[in-house]
Image (cartoon, rainbow, N blue to C red; front, side, top):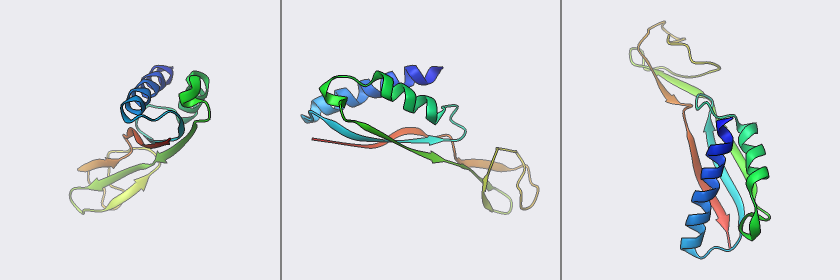
Length: 113
């Protein structure tokens, strides 16, 4: 369960950034997690709620935006959201496709005071 280590690092980054900005309480954290990121949103949420401690994270809420897989065909230029990555364009059948969304894992923003 690598999500535990990822979430611990995420909390460390938030703590350091909040300290630099003089923030004493983080209220809300928004993450973006892509379907192909190999990160399970439920495991991150569990880890966040388990690991958050101290006054900085006391009331912190985690919001997760899940990004679907989107591909673009380099032949017909079609862009499609797909359930699972399959290396053929669903429009023209070309194998020249690129993943344009779905690998994300990042902090979009956090709010604090």
